[in-house]
Image 1: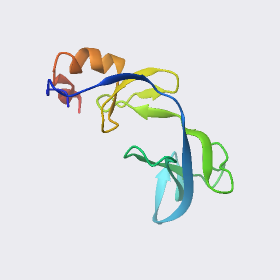
Image 2: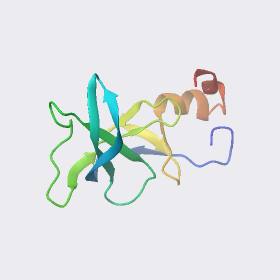
Image 3: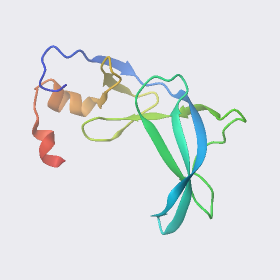
Image 4: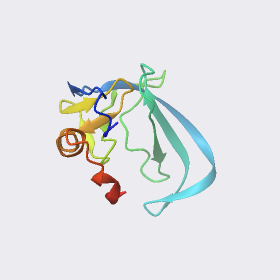
Length: 126
């Protein structure tokens, strides 16, 4: 996607999307920020677009750091950012990024530094 000169990128202002949340219990316990976590919230875009699923821990003390879901699991505006495919920084709602037809997002800095120049040096940081 970076070295292909015919790859099409559109500059787009990211807008928050509704998300659908569902809780589930994992088979194993994970230690997150010093707490044992067995319950998780799976978050997906409500419109079904995109290919990303996010998982948020439900802490035994303090709950989850998410807005409250409606009874049907919908969180209005709950998909509040995208991640740059190259540097993993957030592209927050209201900010511009570049997106291709497969919903890959890159931030403006990575677009300028890597995509325009067809530069793969970001691989050195992986």
